[in-house]
Length: 399
Image: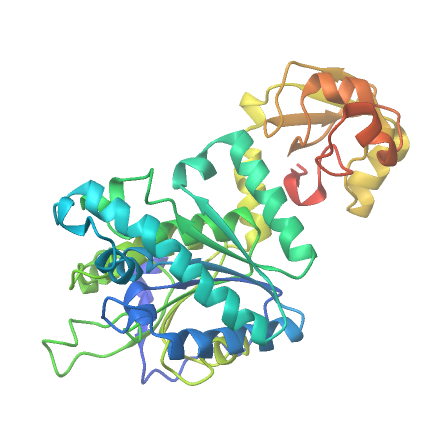
């Protein structure tokens, strides 16, 4: 028998064991807002609920927490403007084109609501429509990451949504809960400390609480077992695109990335602040590895398939190996390629001794051009700028 078979993989809400007490307040969070939460199950936005969420986000920002939102609801929000268009009867209900039109009409309504309510609390929101494919492409992944980091640096709250106008998998019903999985992928992209999925339901239960009155809330999960999978519910309505099954898929991604994830009701008073303060609300999915360890493991998988290498001088070698510093271009002495921005490369000393492996921020020909130079000169030398580091310390793993 394996050791993990001796330990229950989840506890119900009446458990005496609380794994949330040791949680420190996160510095960066991703919040996914479900369709039913934003619309109250209707074909229009629930502005009161959205305002309450915005108020909580404003409070988190004041405490120094970076916040990103993944928002559903565009399709539902598009119902009202579609009803006012003179040619509404030309669209056949239930078709992909119909739902794409709803998404396109509803997205401005959704963003206008966020923008106006955020203005009351003195912060700006920024819209980004992306797809999971964008996060699976090396160059687009890095561009998204840099853009979102820049927005957070100036104090804005990025609001992201699956681009329903061009990504039709969710609209056809072939793939449920794109925004659930998208939020998990995004949390990994921006190195979030916590992912929160807010909706109408208060968490994962042992059975369907709508059917079984004895169903219990599962307060934490450390492994998604077959029993956990069977506890999940499928989509239960025509408004949202996903049910508990898609949330478990998001949990797998989040846990594999070393990021805790919470499923909770968005109607709980001060739910975001309470979760960030470590209170036991909803269902917490607890990864068994840290975010740093997860990333290190992923980078180390590229050891045998690294695209190229760079060698550095003794000062850079010491800074990277012993001081936890990033690798700057001034310390690079030679380049072996070709490799592209986003590839895993080897970092060595002059004699070829391996220091570690990391994700490069620049192509090999660009590193060749900037090696030995101060980072401040990069925009002039290259005509563009992807950061001061050739390899950032967060994207490096040492043996």
